[in-house]
Length: 543
Image (cartoon, rainbow, N blue to C red; front, side):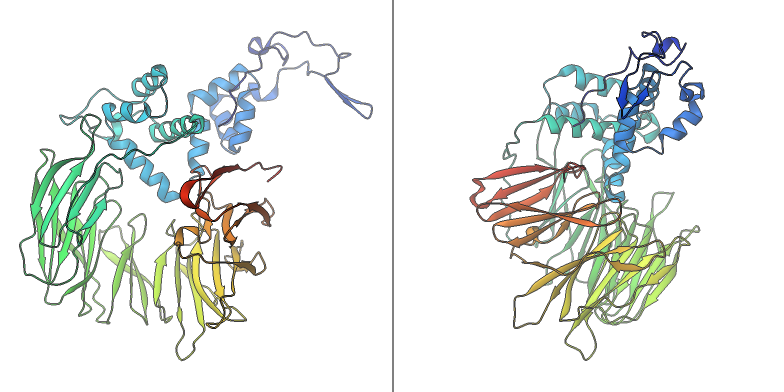
Protein backbone atom coordinates (compact mmCIF):
# COMPACT_ATOMS: atom_id res chain seq x y z
CA UNK A 1 0.00 0.00 0.00
CA UNK A 2 1.40 3.39 -0.96
CA UNK A 3 2.13 6.04 1.71
CA UNK A 4 -0.54 8.70 2.32
CA UNK A 5 -0.53 11.58 -0.16
CA UNK A 6 1.05 14.57 1.60
CA UNK A 7 0.36 17.63 -0.54
CA UNK A 8 2.96 20.37 -0.88
CA UNK A 9 1.39 23.51 0.57
CA UNK A 10 4.62 25.24 1.58
CA UNK A 11 6.58 25.20 -1.69
CA UNK A 12 6.45 28.28 -3.96
CA UNK A 13 5.56 28.06 -7.62
CA UNK A 14 5.41 31.81 -8.30
CA UNK A 15 2.24 33.85 -7.78
CA UNK A 16 -0.11 30.90 -7.92
CA UNK A 17 -2.25 31.32 -4.75
CA UNK A 18 -2.67 27.57 -4.49
CA UNK A 19 1.06 27.13 -4.00
CA UNK A 20 1.81 30.18 -1.89
CA UNK A 21 3.75 30.02 1.33
CA UNK A 22 7.45 30.64 0.59
CA UNK A 23 8.92 33.90 -0.69
CA UNK A 24 11.13 33.19 -3.71
CA UNK A 25 14.75 34.14 -3.22
CA UNK A 26 17.34 33.46 -5.92
CA UNK A 27 20.09 33.33 -3.34
CA UNK A 28 18.36 30.65 -1.31
CA UNK A 29 19.09 27.26 -2.90
CA UNK A 30 17.19 24.11 -2.01
CA UNK A 31 19.65 21.55 -3.42
CA UNK A 32 23.34 21.71 -4.27
CA UNK A 33 25.86 19.32 -5.82
CA UNK A 34 29.30 19.92 -7.36
CA UNK A 35 28.80 23.64 -7.35
CA UNK A 36 25.35 23.55 -8.97
CA UNK A 37 22.30 24.87 -7.14
CA UNK A 38 18.58 24.42 -7.68
CA UNK A 39 16.37 27.30 -6.54
CA UNK A 40 12.59 27.79 -6.50
CA UNK A 41 11.23 29.09 -9.81
CA UNK A 42 9.93 32.67 -9.63
CA UNK A 43 7.37 32.04 -12.39
CA UNK A 44 4.24 29.98 -12.06
CA UNK A 45 4.80 26.23 -12.53
CA UNK A 46 4.18 25.72 -16.27
CA UNK A 47 1.83 22.74 -15.86
CA UNK A 48 -0.55 24.91 -13.84
CA UNK A 49 -1.23 27.01 -16.92
CA UNK A 50 -2.80 24.02 -18.64
CA UNK A 51 -6.59 23.55 -18.69
CA UNK A 52 -7.88 20.39 -17.10
CA UNK A 53 -8.39 18.26 -20.28
CA UNK A 54 -4.77 18.42 -21.53
CA UNK A 55 -3.59 18.10 -17.93
CA UNK A 56 -5.52 14.83 -17.61
CA UNK A 57 -4.14 13.68 -20.97
CA UNK A 58 -0.58 14.18 -19.74
CA UNK A 59 -1.25 12.48 -16.42
CA UNK A 60 -2.68 9.52 -18.32
CA UNK A 61 0.79 8.73 -19.71
CA UNK A 62 2.32 8.43 -16.24
CA UNK A 63 2.80 5.24 -14.25
CA UNK A 64 1.07 4.66 -10.92
CA UNK A 65 4.12 5.77 -8.93
CA UNK A 66 4.53 8.88 -11.07
CA UNK A 67 0.88 9.84 -10.60
CA UNK A 68 1.29 9.30 -6.85
CA UNK A 69 4.35 11.57 -6.82
CA UNK A 70 2.53 14.23 -8.85
CA UNK A 71 -0.38 14.20 -6.40
CA UNK A 72 2.04 15.27 -3.66
CA UNK A 73 3.31 18.38 -5.46
CA UNK A 74 0.43 20.80 -4.86
CA UNK A 75 -3.25 20.99 -4.05
CA UNK A 76 -4.23 21.68 -7.67
CA UNK A 77 -2.64 18.47 -8.99
CA UNK A 78 -3.91 16.48 -6.04
CA UNK A 79 -7.47 17.68 -6.61
CA UNK A 80 -7.45 16.70 -10.30
CA UNK A 81 -6.00 13.27 -9.56
CA UNK A 82 -8.51 12.72 -6.75
CA UNK A 83 -11.55 13.94 -8.70
CA UNK A 84 -10.74 11.73 -11.71
CA UNK A 85 -9.69 8.70 -9.61
CA UNK A 86 -6.42 8.48 -11.54
CA UNK A 87 -4.65 6.36 -8.91
CA UNK A 88 -7.43 3.77 -8.93
CA UNK A 89 -7.64 3.79 -12.73
CA UNK A 90 -3.88 3.42 -13.17
CA UNK A 91 -3.77 0.52 -10.68
CA UNK A 92 -6.75 -1.18 -12.34
CA UNK A 93 -5.27 -0.83 -15.84
CA UNK A 94 -2.28 -2.97 -14.83
CA UNK A 95 -4.50 -5.98 -14.16
CA UNK A 96 -4.94 -8.69 -16.79
CA UNK A 97 -7.82 -8.10 -19.21
CA UNK A 98 -9.85 -11.09 -18.03
CA UNK A 99 -9.41 -9.96 -14.42
CA UNK A 100 -10.66 -6.46 -15.28
CA UNK A 101 -13.75 -7.98 -16.93
CA UNK A 102 -14.42 -10.14 -13.90
CA UNK A 103 -14.08 -7.21 -11.46
CA UNK A 104 -16.39 -5.06 -13.58
CA UNK A 105 -19.06 -7.77 -13.59
CA UNK A 106 -18.81 -8.17 -9.81
CA UNK A 107 -19.06 -4.41 -9.25
CA UNK A 108 -22.00 -4.08 -11.60
CA UNK A 109 -24.33 -6.41 -9.70
CA UNK A 110 -23.18 -6.10 -6.09
CA UNK A 111 -25.83 -4.80 -3.70
CA UNK A 112 -25.31 -2.17 -1.01
CA UNK A 113 -25.87 -4.74 1.72
CA UNK A 114 -23.40 -7.27 0.31
CA UNK A 115 -20.85 -4.54 -0.38
CA UNK A 116 -20.98 -3.31 3.23
CA UNK A 117 -20.72 -6.89 4.53
CA UNK A 118 -17.72 -7.54 2.29
CA UNK A 119 -15.85 -4.36 3.21
CA UNK A 120 -16.37 -4.92 6.95
CA UNK A 121 -14.21 -8.04 6.66
CA UNK A 122 -11.22 -5.79 5.97
CA UNK A 123 -11.87 -2.71 8.10
CA UNK A 124 -13.76 -1.62 11.19
CA UNK A 125 -13.77 1.99 10.00
CA UNK A 126 -17.43 2.55 9.22
CA UNK A 127 -16.61 5.94 7.69
CA UNK A 128 -14.57 4.28 4.92
CA UNK A 129 -17.32 1.77 4.22
CA UNK A 130 -20.06 4.39 4.32
CA UNK A 131 -18.19 6.79 2.04
CA UNK A 132 -17.60 4.18 -0.63
CA UNK A 133 -21.21 2.99 -0.57
CA UNK A 134 -22.79 6.46 -0.53
CA UNK A 135 -20.39 8.16 -2.92
CA UNK A 136 -20.11 5.55 -5.66
CA UNK A 137 -23.35 3.53 -5.51
CA UNK A 138 -26.67 4.82 -6.77
CA UNK A 139 -29.70 4.64 -4.51
CA UNK A 140 -32.02 2.74 -6.84
CA UNK A 141 -32.15 -1.02 -6.45
CA UNK A 142 -34.36 -3.84 -7.56
CA UNK A 143 -36.57 -5.82 -5.22
CA UNK A 144 -33.84 -8.36 -4.56
CA UNK A 145 -31.36 -5.66 -3.52
CA UNK A 146 -29.27 -5.72 -6.69
CA UNK A 147 -28.45 -2.78 -8.92
CA UNK A 148 -30.63 -2.43 -11.99
CA UNK A 149 -27.96 -1.41 -14.48
CA UNK A 150 -24.49 -0.10 -15.23
CA UNK A 151 -25.73 3.43 -15.91
CA UNK A 152 -26.79 3.86 -12.29
CA UNK A 153 -23.24 3.37 -11.05
CA UNK A 154 -20.94 6.32 -10.65
CA UNK A 155 -18.14 6.47 -13.19
CA UNK A 156 -15.09 4.29 -12.44
CA UNK A 157 -16.86 2.47 -9.61
CA UNK A 158 -15.15 -0.91 -10.32
CA UNK A 159 -11.73 0.75 -10.35
CA UNK A 160 -12.35 2.63 -7.11
CA UNK A 161 -13.94 -0.37 -5.38
CA UNK A 162 -11.16 -2.87 -6.00
CA UNK A 163 -8.40 -0.30 -5.55
CA UNK A 164 -9.88 0.45 -2.13
CA UNK A 165 -10.18 -3.25 -1.33
CA UNK A 166 -6.54 -3.81 -2.32
CA UNK A 167 -5.43 -1.10 0.09
CA UNK A 168 -7.59 -2.49 2.88
CA UNK A 169 -6.21 -5.98 2.29
CA UNK A 170 -2.66 -4.63 2.44
CA UNK A 171 -3.44 -3.28 5.92
CA UNK A 172 -4.82 -6.60 7.19
CA UNK A 173 -2.33 -8.22 9.53
CA UNK A 174 -3.77 -11.70 9.30
CA UNK A 175 -6.28 -13.71 7.28
CA UNK A 176 -7.96 -16.61 9.01
CA UNK A 177 -9.99 -19.05 6.90
CA UNK A 178 -13.42 -19.75 8.34
CA UNK A 179 -15.61 -22.69 7.32
CA UNK A 180 -18.78 -21.17 5.91
CA UNK A 181 -20.78 -24.24 4.95
CA UNK A 182 -20.54 -28.01 4.72
CA UNK A 183 -22.65 -29.55 1.98
CA UNK A 184 -23.04 -33.33 1.98
CA UNK A 185 -23.84 -34.72 -1.43
CA UNK A 186 -23.22 -37.59 -3.79
CA UNK A 187 -19.52 -38.21 -4.50
CA UNK A 188 -20.07 -38.17 -8.26
CA UNK A 189 -21.66 -34.68 -8.31
CA UNK A 190 -20.09 -31.79 -10.22
CA UNK A 191 -19.92 -28.24 -8.86
CA UNK A 192 -19.59 -24.86 -10.51
CA UNK A 193 -19.23 -21.35 -9.04
CA UNK A 194 -20.39 -18.27 -10.91
CA UNK A 195 -17.97 -15.43 -11.58
CA UNK A 196 -19.17 -13.36 -8.64
CA UNK A 197 -18.60 -16.27 -6.28
CA UNK A 198 -22.03 -15.80 -4.68
CA UNK A 199 -23.79 -18.79 -6.27
CA UNK A 200 -22.80 -22.46 -6.25
CA UNK A 201 -24.32 -25.09 -8.54
CA UNK A 202 -24.26 -28.76 -7.60
CA UNK A 203 -25.33 -31.06 -10.43
CA UNK A 204 -25.81 -34.66 -9.34
CA UNK A 205 -25.42 -37.70 -11.50
CA UNK A 206 -29.07 -38.58 -10.99
CA UNK A 207 -30.26 -35.55 -12.97
CA UNK A 208 -30.87 -33.13 -10.12
CA UNK A 209 -29.39 -29.63 -9.86
CA UNK A 210 -29.30 -27.44 -6.75
CA UNK A 211 -28.23 -23.79 -6.51
CA UNK A 212 -26.87 -22.37 -3.25
CA UNK A 213 -26.64 -18.60 -2.80
CA UNK A 214 -24.57 -16.37 -0.55
CA UNK A 215 -25.93 -13.18 0.97
CA UNK A 216 -24.85 -11.06 3.91
CA UNK A 217 -27.78 -12.18 6.07
CA UNK A 218 -27.91 -15.83 5.02
CA UNK A 219 -24.59 -17.35 3.88
CA UNK A 220 -24.75 -20.35 1.53
CA UNK A 221 -28.35 -21.43 1.67
CA UNK A 222 -30.37 -23.47 -0.82
CA UNK A 223 -32.14 -21.14 -3.24
CA UNK A 224 -33.36 -23.18 -6.20
CA UNK A 225 -33.36 -26.61 -7.81
CA UNK A 226 -34.22 -28.17 -11.14
CA UNK A 227 -34.56 -31.63 -12.66
CA UNK A 228 -32.78 -32.93 -15.73
CA UNK A 229 -35.21 -35.64 -16.81
CA UNK A 230 -33.67 -37.53 -19.71
CA UNK A 231 -32.09 -40.79 -20.71
CA UNK A 232 -29.86 -42.56 -18.24
CA UNK A 233 -26.27 -42.64 -19.38
CA UNK A 234 -22.82 -43.02 -17.98
CA UNK A 235 -20.47 -40.13 -17.42
CA UNK A 236 -20.76 -36.88 -15.50
CA UNK A 237 -22.93 -33.97 -16.64
CA UNK A 238 -21.36 -30.76 -17.89
CA UNK A 239 -22.35 -27.55 -16.13
CA UNK A 240 -21.52 -23.89 -16.11
CA UNK A 241 -22.85 -20.58 -14.86
CA UNK A 242 -23.40 -17.39 -16.75
CA UNK A 243 -21.39 -14.47 -15.41
CA UNK A 244 -24.40 -13.03 -13.60
CA UNK A 245 -25.43 -16.42 -12.25
CA UNK A 246 -28.68 -16.39 -14.25
CA UNK A 247 -28.07 -19.26 -16.68
CA UNK A 248 -27.02 -22.87 -16.24
CA UNK A 249 -25.82 -25.12 -19.08
CA UNK A 250 -26.23 -28.85 -18.45
CA UNK A 251 -25.54 -31.72 -20.85
CA UNK A 252 -26.12 -35.45 -20.62
CA UNK A 253 -26.05 -38.10 -23.30
CA UNK A 254 -27.56 -36.55 -26.45
CA UNK A 255 -29.38 -33.71 -24.73
CA UNK A 256 -28.27 -30.19 -23.76
CA UNK A 257 -30.45 -27.87 -21.71
CA UNK A 258 -30.13 -24.25 -20.58
CA UNK A 259 -31.96 -23.23 -17.41
CA UNK A 260 -32.67 -19.68 -16.29
CA UNK A 261 -32.20 -18.77 -12.64
CA UNK A 262 -34.97 -16.25 -11.96
CA UNK A 263 -35.24 -13.35 -9.54
CA UNK A 264 -37.86 -15.26 -7.51
CA UNK A 265 -35.24 -18.01 -6.87
CA UNK A 266 -36.88 -20.47 -9.25
CA UNK A 267 -35.36 -22.27 -12.23
CA UNK A 268 -37.08 -22.61 -15.59
CA UNK A 269 -35.99 -24.50 -18.68
CA UNK A 270 -35.25 -22.10 -21.53
CA UNK A 271 -33.79 -24.32 -24.20
CA UNK A 272 -33.58 -28.06 -24.88
CA UNK A 273 -31.38 -29.31 -27.72
CA UNK A 274 -31.50 -32.91 -28.86
CA UNK A 275 -28.65 -34.32 -30.97
CA UNK A 276 -28.24 -37.49 -32.96
CA UNK A 277 -24.76 -38.03 -31.56
CA UNK A 278 -23.57 -38.10 -27.98
CA UNK A 279 -22.45 -34.70 -26.66
CA UNK A 280 -18.70 -34.75 -26.13
CA UNK A 281 -17.89 -31.09 -25.45
CA UNK A 282 -19.82 -27.99 -24.38
CA UNK A 283 -18.96 -24.51 -23.16
CA UNK A 284 -20.73 -21.34 -22.08
CA UNK A 285 -19.12 -17.99 -22.96
CA UNK A 286 -17.89 -15.64 -20.26
CA UNK A 287 -20.84 -13.27 -20.69
CA UNK A 288 -23.26 -16.20 -20.76
CA UNK A 289 -24.79 -15.20 -24.09
CA UNK A 290 -23.36 -18.00 -26.23
CA UNK A 291 -23.18 -21.77 -25.89
CA UNK A 292 -21.20 -24.13 -28.12
CA UNK A 293 -22.15 -27.82 -28.18
CA UNK A 294 -20.20 -30.56 -29.98
CA UNK A 295 -21.17 -34.19 -30.51
CA UNK A 296 -18.94 -37.20 -31.07
CA UNK A 297 -20.06 -37.32 -34.72
CA UNK A 298 -18.27 -34.00 -35.33
CA UNK A 299 -21.35 -31.77 -35.42
CA UNK A 300 -20.74 -28.40 -33.75
CA UNK A 301 -23.27 -25.62 -33.26
CA UNK A 302 -23.34 -22.26 -31.48
CA UNK A 303 -26.52 -20.99 -29.85
CA UNK A 304 -26.83 -17.32 -28.82
CA UNK A 305 -29.10 -15.31 -26.54
CA UNK A 306 -30.74 -12.63 -28.69
CA UNK A 307 -32.27 -9.22 -27.95
CA UNK A 308 -35.76 -10.68 -27.64
CA UNK A 309 -34.73 -12.93 -24.77
CA UNK A 310 -34.56 -16.24 -26.62
CA UNK A 311 -31.87 -18.74 -27.53
CA UNK A 312 -31.40 -19.19 -31.28
CA UNK A 313 -29.03 -21.17 -33.50
CA UNK A 314 -26.34 -18.67 -34.48
CA UNK A 315 -23.89 -20.86 -36.41
CA UNK A 316 -23.27 -24.38 -37.60
CA UNK A 317 -19.51 -24.98 -37.57
CA UNK A 318 -19.68 -28.75 -38.06
CA UNK A 319 -16.28 -30.24 -38.87
CA UNK A 320 -16.95 -34.00 -38.93
CA UNK A 321 -13.60 -34.72 -37.30
CA UNK A 322 -13.24 -37.17 -34.46
CA UNK A 323 -12.53 -36.09 -30.89
CA UNK A 324 -13.56 -32.50 -31.62
CA UNK A 325 -13.55 -30.11 -28.65
CA UNK A 326 -14.53 -26.47 -28.26
CA UNK A 327 -13.73 -23.56 -25.96
CA UNK A 328 -14.63 -19.85 -25.93
CA UNK A 329 -11.97 -17.16 -25.61
CA UNK A 330 -11.90 -15.31 -22.24
CA UNK A 331 -13.95 -12.40 -23.63
CA UNK A 332 -16.38 -14.66 -25.56
CA UNK A 333 -15.66 -13.05 -28.94
CA UNK A 334 -14.06 -16.19 -30.40
CA UNK A 335 -14.61 -19.92 -30.22
CA UNK A 336 -11.84 -22.46 -30.72
CA UNK A 337 -12.50 -25.95 -32.06
CA UNK A 338 -9.80 -28.54 -32.39
CA UNK A 339 -9.15 -32.18 -33.07
CA UNK A 340 -5.74 -33.82 -33.02
CA UNK A 341 -5.01 -32.80 -36.61
CA UNK A 342 -6.71 -29.40 -37.00
CA UNK A 343 -7.43 -26.24 -35.03
CA UNK A 344 -9.92 -23.58 -36.12
CA UNK A 345 -10.91 -20.20 -34.67
CA UNK A 346 -14.26 -18.58 -35.44
CA UNK A 347 -15.01 -14.97 -34.52
CA UNK A 348 -18.37 -13.38 -33.81
CA UNK A 349 -19.19 -10.87 -36.58
CA UNK A 350 -21.27 -7.69 -36.63
CA UNK A 351 -24.35 -9.55 -37.89
CA UNK A 352 -24.33 -11.90 -34.90
CA UNK A 353 -22.97 -14.86 -36.85
CA UNK A 354 -19.58 -16.56 -36.63
CA UNK A 355 -16.85 -16.27 -39.28
CA UNK A 356 -13.88 -18.60 -39.71
CA UNK A 357 -10.70 -16.63 -38.95
CA UNK A 358 -7.87 -19.13 -39.13
CA UNK A 359 -7.14 -22.82 -39.63
CA UNK A 360 -3.99 -24.57 -38.43
CA UNK A 361 -3.09 -28.11 -39.44
CA UNK A 362 -0.51 -28.45 -36.68
CA UNK A 363 -0.92 -31.89 -35.08
CA UNK A 364 -1.83 -30.76 -31.57
CA UNK A 365 -2.98 -32.87 -28.67
CA UNK A 366 -3.67 -29.82 -26.48
CA UNK A 367 -4.87 -26.35 -27.54
CA UNK A 368 -5.72 -23.50 -25.15
CA UNK A 369 -6.28 -19.75 -25.21
CA UNK A 370 -3.87 -17.55 -23.30
CA UNK A 371 -5.45 -15.68 -20.34
CA UNK A 372 -5.95 -12.50 -22.38
CA UNK A 373 -7.17 -14.35 -25.48
CA UNK A 374 -4.45 -12.95 -27.76
CA UNK A 375 -2.65 -16.29 -28.24
CA UNK A 376 -3.49 -19.93 -28.79
CA UNK A 377 -0.96 -22.37 -27.33
CA UNK A 378 -0.58 -25.71 -29.13
CA UNK A 379 1.72 -28.59 -28.30
CA UNK A 380 1.89 -32.31 -28.92
CA UNK A 381 3.93 -35.28 -30.09
CA UNK A 382 4.65 -34.62 -33.75
CA UNK A 383 3.71 -37.20 -36.35
CA UNK A 384 6.13 -40.07 -36.36
CA UNK A 385 8.46 -38.40 -33.86
CA UNK A 386 8.62 -39.02 -30.14
CA UNK A 387 9.83 -35.49 -29.42
CA UNK A 388 7.15 -33.01 -28.40
CA UNK A 389 7.05 -29.57 -29.98
CA UNK A 390 4.83 -26.52 -29.56
CA UNK A 391 3.51 -23.63 -31.61
CA UNK A 392 1.82 -20.32 -30.87
CA UNK A 393 -0.97 -18.67 -32.85
CA UNK A 394 -0.78 -14.94 -32.13
CA UNK A 395 -3.25 -12.17 -32.90
CA UNK A 396 -1.46 -9.26 -34.60
CA UNK A 397 -2.32 -5.57 -34.74
CA UNK A 398 -4.28 -5.98 -37.98
CA UNK A 399 -6.59 -8.59 -36.46
CA UNK A 400 -5.00 -11.54 -38.26
CA UNK A 401 -3.39 -14.61 -36.75
CA UNK A 402 0.31 -15.44 -37.11
CA UNK A 403 1.63 -18.95 -36.53
CA UNK A 404 5.04 -19.10 -34.88
CA UNK A 405 7.89 -21.35 -35.90
CA UNK A 406 7.91 -24.63 -33.95
CA UNK A 407 9.11 -24.23 -30.37
CA UNK A 408 11.58 -27.06 -29.89
CA UNK A 409 14.10 -28.20 -27.31
CA UNK A 410 17.46 -29.14 -28.76
CA UNK A 411 18.07 -31.89 -26.23
CA UNK A 412 14.57 -33.25 -25.75
CA UNK A 413 10.90 -32.32 -25.79
CA UNK A 414 8.69 -29.34 -24.97
CA UNK A 415 6.22 -30.81 -22.50
CA UNK A 416 4.26 -27.71 -21.47
CA UNK A 417 3.68 -24.08 -22.51
CA UNK A 418 2.44 -21.30 -20.20
CA UNK A 419 1.43 -17.78 -21.32
CA UNK A 420 1.61 -14.64 -19.20
CA UNK A 421 -1.69 -12.91 -18.38
CA UNK A 422 -0.86 -9.97 -20.67
CA UNK A 423 0.30 -12.19 -23.54
CA UNK A 424 3.80 -10.68 -23.73
CA UNK A 425 5.73 -13.77 -22.59
CA UNK A 426 5.50 -17.55 -22.66
CA UNK A 427 7.30 -20.24 -20.69
CA UNK A 428 8.30 -23.52 -22.30
CA UNK A 429 8.97 -26.43 -19.96
CA UNK A 430 11.39 -28.92 -21.45
CA UNK A 431 12.42 -32.48 -20.66
CA UNK A 432 15.68 -33.98 -21.88
CA UNK A 433 14.34 -37.51 -22.32
CA UNK A 434 11.95 -39.98 -20.71
CA UNK A 435 14.73 -41.82 -18.93
CA UNK A 436 15.86 -38.79 -16.93
CA UNK A 437 14.10 -36.34 -14.65
CA UNK A 438 16.10 -33.40 -16.01
CA UNK A 439 13.60 -30.55 -16.45
CA UNK A 440 14.42 -27.06 -17.69
CA UNK A 441 12.45 -23.97 -18.65
CA UNK A 442 13.05 -20.87 -20.68
CA UNK A 443 11.10 -17.67 -21.28
CA UNK A 444 10.27 -16.33 -24.74
CA UNK A 445 9.09 -12.76 -25.27
CA UNK A 446 7.28 -11.18 -28.20
CA UNK A 447 9.21 -8.35 -29.89
CA UNK A 448 7.98 -5.38 -31.93
CA UNK A 449 7.94 -7.53 -35.08
CA UNK A 450 5.59 -10.03 -33.40
CA UNK A 451 8.35 -12.65 -33.36
CA UNK A 452 9.06 -14.81 -30.32
CA UNK A 453 12.66 -14.65 -29.07
CA UNK A 454 14.34 -16.42 -26.19
CA UNK A 455 15.02 -13.99 -23.34
CA UNK A 456 16.52 -16.50 -20.89
CA UNK A 457 18.80 -19.50 -21.12
CA UNK A 458 17.60 -22.94 -20.06
CA UNK A 459 16.99 -22.84 -16.30
CA UNK A 460 17.08 -26.06 -14.30
CA UNK A 461 13.86 -26.58 -12.32
CA UNK A 462 11.77 -29.33 -10.76
CA UNK A 463 8.12 -30.08 -11.40
CA UNK A 464 6.45 -31.03 -8.09
CA UNK A 465 3.46 -33.35 -8.12
CA UNK A 466 1.36 -30.40 -6.97
CA UNK A 467 0.79 -28.32 -10.13
CA UNK A 468 0.25 -25.22 -7.96
CA UNK A 469 4.04 -25.16 -7.51
CA UNK A 470 4.76 -25.30 -11.24
CA UNK A 471 6.17 -22.13 -12.86
CA UNK A 472 3.64 -19.31 -12.74
CA UNK A 473 3.46 -15.70 -13.86
CA UNK A 474 2.44 -12.84 -11.61
CA UNK A 475 -0.82 -11.10 -12.60
CA UNK A 476 1.08 -8.26 -14.31
CA UNK A 477 3.29 -10.71 -16.24
CA UNK A 478 6.51 -9.15 -14.93
CA UNK A 479 7.54 -11.93 -12.51
CA UNK A 480 7.83 -15.70 -12.68
CA UNK A 481 7.99 -18.05 -9.69
CA UNK A 482 9.79 -21.35 -10.15
CA UNK A 483 10.84 -24.28 -7.93
CA UNK A 484 14.54 -25.12 -8.12
CA UNK A 485 14.35 -27.71 -5.37
CA UNK A 486 11.95 -28.88 -2.66
CA UNK A 487 13.26 -26.20 -0.29
CA UNK A 488 14.18 -23.40 -2.67
CA UNK A 489 12.06 -21.12 -4.81
CA UNK A 490 13.21 -18.46 -7.21
CA UNK A 491 11.50 -15.39 -8.61
CA UNK A 492 12.53 -13.98 -11.98
CA UNK A 493 11.68 -10.32 -12.58
CA UNK A 494 11.67 -8.57 -15.96
CA UNK A 495 13.31 -5.13 -16.01
CA UNK A 496 12.53 -2.28 -18.41
CA UNK A 497 15.07 -3.59 -20.92
CA UNK A 498 13.42 -7.00 -21.09
CA UNK A 499 16.08 -8.82 -19.06
CA UNK A 500 15.00 -11.38 -16.47
CA UNK A 501 16.77 -11.01 -13.11
CA UNK A 502 16.84 -13.98 -10.72
CA UNK A 503 16.14 -13.65 -6.99
CA UNK A 504 16.64 -16.88 -4.96
CA UNK A 505 14.31 -17.37 -1.99
CA UNK A 506 15.64 -19.93 0.50
CA UNK A 507 12.80 -21.65 2.28
CA UNK A 508 13.74 -24.03 5.06
CA UNK A 509 11.32 -26.88 4.69
CA UNK A 510 9.27 -28.16 1.79
CA UNK A 511 7.04 -25.59 0.13
CA UNK A 512 3.31 -26.32 0.13
CA UNK A 513 1.89 -23.31 -1.72
CA UNK A 514 3.26 -20.15 -3.32
CA UNK A 515 1.13 -17.34 -4.77
CA UNK A 516 1.46 -13.77 -6.01
CA UNK A 517 -0.73 -10.98 -4.68
CA UNK A 518 -3.25 -9.47 -7.17
CA UNK A 519 -1.10 -6.33 -7.58
CA UNK A 520 2.06 -8.47 -8.13
CA UNK A 521 3.97 -6.61 -5.40
CA UNK A 522 4.05 -9.52 -2.93
CA UNK A 523 4.62 -13.27 -2.94
CA UNK A 524 3.34 -15.52 -0.14
CA UNK A 525 4.94 -18.91 0.49
CA UNK A 526 3.46 -21.50 2.83
CA UNK A 527 5.45 -24.47 4.10
CA UNK A 528 4.40 -28.09 4.39
CA UNK A 529 2.09 -28.61 7.31
CA UNK A 530 1.34 -24.87 7.16
CA UNK A 531 3.83 -24.33 10.00
CA UNK A 532 5.82 -21.63 8.20
CA UNK A 533 4.56 -18.76 6.09
CA UNK A 534 6.63 -15.97 4.58
CA UNK A 535 5.77 -12.94 2.49
CA UNK A 536 8.28 -11.35 0.13
CA UNK A 537 7.74 -7.85 -1.29
CA UNK A 538 9.09 -6.51 -4.58
CA UNK A 539 11.07 -3.29 -4.68
CA UNK A 540 11.97 -2.01 -8.15
CA UNK A 541 15.34 -0.73 -6.94
CA UNK A 542 16.40 -3.78 -4.92
CA UNK A 543 14.36 -6.61 -6.41
